[in-house]
Image (cartoon, rainbow, N blue to C red; front, side, top):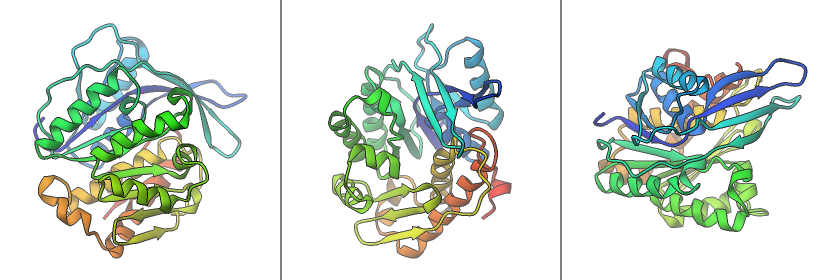
Length: 304
């Protein structure tokens, strides 16, 4: 792959558990979901990940390929596919029990126009060292970078230590998207706009914060914007944030706002453009929560 989008990170078998029903296995993992979402929106997307050869690994690989995602590996064999038992509460909100090992080796990949990284793979050693090395190299080669911490407390240890690792990724990014739950765990007691200001000072041009049913917000060094949530009948919220991220990247690509040459324009997005960005991504999230699993919209479903 040359150009287009490259996503680096984990693929996870989500074992969805609802009390009183049989378990259902879905392909998941935040980075894999973003790659899948981009491909569903018609974008050229590759995913550098680790998958095992067991049935759940084959299921995930097949799922990604059906959307047109190009799968890349670091050449290691015998790696297990990460798993997450996702237990859905009465309100559709998920809780997670994770078994994730991330040992990605530094790998040469063709330069994309844009690189996305996030979640466990960006901060979990030993593989996170390779992720950051790849990020630094591709950014220097001209890719813009987005990052979603997608916090999983069970794998991150204490918030104070996790903050330093997260902020290293924030500093390497042009755009950061996080949920209000991510921020509450990483920076207890701080308002979203305060965290956004802190992150913007590290280097990104744009910080986006999703707030579930309360909508979303966008921050730059110059302006802020808010958008209410699109109406939806919630089946479950699995993958909603990743669909939001994929839609954000899709719209920015459509507007010519990704790639090194676009950095100056990305930094000065006005309130109107930020609001449109939030509205478009919010529609993608609403469509995703209206059906089971991480099942993001196609370009035809989402519209312009």
